[in-house]
Image (cartoon, rainbow, N blue to C red):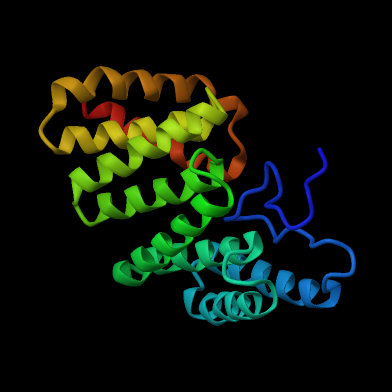
Length: 214
């Protein structure tokens, strides 16, 4: 399916895929440079080479802000990856600030129900889980679930987020409410395991761990 110029590529993962190509005549050489820098930075992040990933992702963000603007989808995609790097390095204050910046812009540019807006909500929720701020995590993850399910009911990501949300509920002490919903979401995910992309397979181990708690 054709993606409009400057939009995030449909079906692509901003954790793995490159930046979307701009409209013809809008800076092809610049785009190629930033796309290469971005892809290398994301690759290094995936390999745990955080010290090498950070300058590349930071430079990509700065260059895209100058060239495309702070709320362009390409810029927001790069910012999101930099925020994920902060989260992986447990730089939670920096990650949260950047996630909120991306979330506010994506809500304005893409809308509240867009899958990429939901993606940031889910990442913020997972960050709050890591910080043991379970009430905040529950609120964010539920919002992400609702947005994802509106656009892609039954999608792997939509099924995974209820598991996170129910896990947050369980940690809040509401296990009786969380248990049936969590088990149901986990079973639905496990039934779809053959259709889950290879890079998403680690989520199945998380699912098994969540299910074993009930």
